[in-house]
Length: 431
Ligand code: FAD
Figure (cartoon, rainbow, N blue to C red):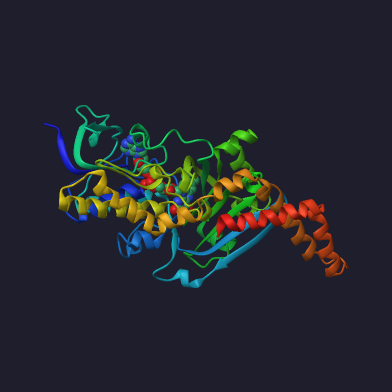
């Protein structure tokens, strides 16, 4: 007799574990399937974890979770080959409870989080691949796994299997992602003495800093680089749309080496030792690429539903909120013993009303706009750097002369018109 659960959740990342935790807490009999040796073993993130969405699930989790550093400063570097225009926000309010964001290492954090779901009563089964959804009479009724006699059944299945989501694809919820709908990110974890990190990044003990890198960090290709402080390691990485890598014929690890050797970055990481190399896709198609998220007996959450806000490098928080909302819907569906698409559609409605849906809509055209018009990264960031250099170099020229030079640097009247148009267009897609 095959096993039957109230719910099967596929994938023990932030989306799946949030969902399983909430369900188990409410007394729902839930099976959490993970293909990795342990939760987090296959997961990659920069990684900034957002306190609010995690606290919606486990209040004051930061008192016991394996976190690296609370982030007190966020820097943004607009990079050219030998210069960087940098702005930052540092706020000591973020150094105190309840904090804002934390850096985390997913291999540690995901394990801890999944263990919390187990303590609530979820059954976690690792090293088990969900091969396909079992569909009967148009309803998802279970999951076929790669274990012998590995069919498991449930009233409802949650697909939280990450960006590739082969299961949602099998159901026809989405097609193979196009190269302009996913970014490929590569990153390294670099070992560095704790005190050296604090000195280099101007931090008090146990405070953290994130630096986002734009422009030359990706050789002008649409994407970003990042450099984050952990306890005694740094996370450095770079991610660009797959379409950009293909177009520019650049290999992702070449881009990572380029960032590590960039004169604006090299001094931060000097003397560090690589301890881990990771690569992963990020769904960056945005709102217009979101697949169907509800069917008869099935819900889709997190990266599997393309829920990433690439503009603000948010993904784990959207994943957690979607997992939590999926659980709320399932708890309600269980009360009515109705797992039809119509009933489960409450999840889609809640998701779109939440910050997740609202932010996905806000930036619905942003990625495609910046992909279509590469001049923002290729031309305007270097132009900003030249303007800053001009303005801040004291060479006897009057500031009016300098302004005129900067204005001339933009180019012909046509080029100036184009720049003005691009500024307005950028405002429209970001507002
Ligand atoms: P995942 O974390 O991918 O989890 C999916 C899980 O499902 C995995 O454990 C996987 O092993 C499992 N799985 C997959 N298929 C199967 C199967 N068939 N059977 C069983 N198990 C399966 N987000 C942020 O918020 N902040 C950041 O700083 C940040 N930086 C990032 C940097 C990089 C380099 C990358 C790649 C991503 C980054 N993100 C960041 C995005 C963030 O990592 C994701 O949005 C988030 O992990 C999505 O969570 P998820 O649970 O939906 O998917």
